[in-house]
Image 1 (cartoon, rainbow, N blue to C red):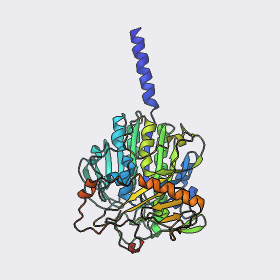
Image 2 (cartoon, rainbow, N blue to C red; image 1 turned 30 degrees about the vertical axis):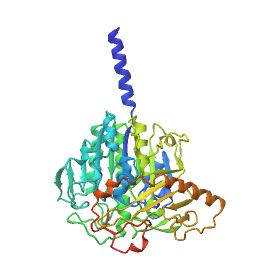
Image 3 (cartoon, rainbow, N blue to C red; image 1 turned 135 degrees about the horizontal axis):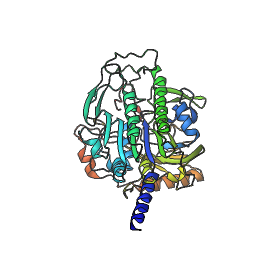
Image 4 (tube, rainbow, N blue to C red; image 1 turned 180 degrees about the vertical axis):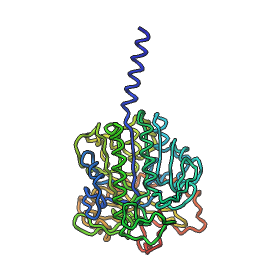
Length: 450
């Protein structure tokens, strides 16, 4: 009898363990909302992303930070940059990431793609990732043709015509194959579609002998890089199907910031200029597509506001992992499961590149229609998405009510910046901080940020 009880208990535990979903979070680099066909994009082909959206949830209002590292820090920690962002290329080692939390919850954890969060040899493992194949970890070699990568901190240089994004995608497919029998978490911050815009192996002018990164920014290759990125997503999904684990895999696809400003796309019948580095919508509005066949059978579109801080609590809730009390994110797991959830009334942004001597700060709160900056500038986004003309003091009743709500949101963060964070940033040659996005400084070639 005792033996039967033990066997039953073990079976119950095994069933509960198997019920945990696998989780894959894919983040494309410099890839705005307008680039996905199903979102209304008309310049590029994204059949695999469109297919994911057809049977999953497509979010229309996901906003992240306007630049790479700020978004990555928010995404991985679930906390606004005002609380933990020091400078470009740094993730404070005192922070807890979704890698740490998922590993603690019993998940096999892996990361592949672009790192750019600290050059310490053990950094990926410190932040919870057991296995890693990364670009820009302890060095910065080429990333595309004949790349330099690091496998668990060991430098790997490729010189036989290999393509960096394919090597990364191969690692992703090997990781899910290796861990198909137990729950895994794979964080996949892609290198594509960031410049330099170079030919891919599918391009007519692909050159397998190319060495280094051409900085000419040949924009015609952006569409080819987009197509290759989409193809790799499809290959990874195909591997999940082959392994029989697709249904119980929660797959999230998101962009890390808006498209580069030199890229002009067609979106819903009009020209749409990329806005990377700006706090306007074309710098923060990114695609978010979520697929989880076990939990969703039909495609849906969700208009709820989503922040880059929301991914950590969402992933943790799906996996049964503990969500720290100090996160700012709000789980959108209920929306994935067809429930109403607790949609956000507003989104908050504290954006400061902290790259070299740049200490500018842009702080704002916004909802579906209105946006208020700490400086007092107030915009109606439905008629002025690029914030060219602030509203006057004479406001309609709904505008006045929205401004009051957004001011209350900003007031919550009035004293949220720990002073020690700014002391850790070398301000000896820094410019005085500004409180508004300085658009005059956006000159060609000036922004060298990733």
